[in-house]
Structures are given as C-alpha cells and as structure tokens.
Length: 137
Figure 1: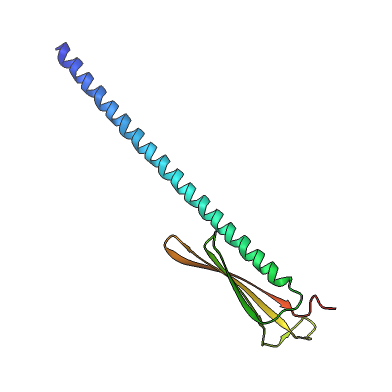
Figure 2 (figure 1 turned 90 degrees about the vertical axis):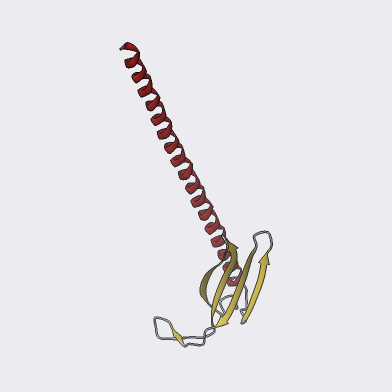
C-alpha cells in the first residue's frame, strides 16, 4: 500500500512540475510580447519626432526667405529615404485683419514629407501663412 501511495504522490509532483513549467512559459511569452510592443511604440515615436523635426526645419527655412515668390521646391534626403516638398503660393482670397484692413501679398507655405514605411507610402504636411513684405524695409 505504501508503494501505491508514494507512486501517486510522485505522479502528482510530476503534474505540479508540468503545470509550473507551463505557467512559466506563458509568463515568459507574455513578457516577450510586451517588450516587443514597447519597442514598436518607441520606434514609432522616434519616427514621428524625426518627421516633425524635418517639417519644422523646412517650414522655418521657407519662412526666413526675405522675398517670397510662388514656387515649388522638392528634394530627397537619401539617407532617410524621404522626399520633402516646399510649396509657396500666393493666397488669392481677400483676407482682412481684425480692423477690417485688406491683407495683400499673403502667402501660404506648405511643406510635405513623403516616405515609405511598413510597406506603405506615408505623407505628412505642415502649413502656415506669411506676409510677403515681412522682411523688407
């Protein structure tokens, strides 16, 4: 009778070990998946910040030109595999300030970044307006 009882306890111990290994495997897999998703989120945030900095830089460059002219410039950043297009166009609509005065020579500056990521073409834009004679005496 003692051999039957000890055999049953050994079998139960083996079952406990198998359950413990299964739970450990599930927990380890969950940690690996969580770390992978955190890495993906960090990569996405870094990419968004990079694109935002490029758009900001190109927009500031276009804003600092002393005399604006209607034009479209495009260049490709080979190391980043990104195309930046800067479009300057005169606003045809009649705009007024708060005092009701007509604002003439207002320009719309649009900067568009295009890149290829995760098997798809991506695009983001930034836009602002500027008075044409802002930096002229």
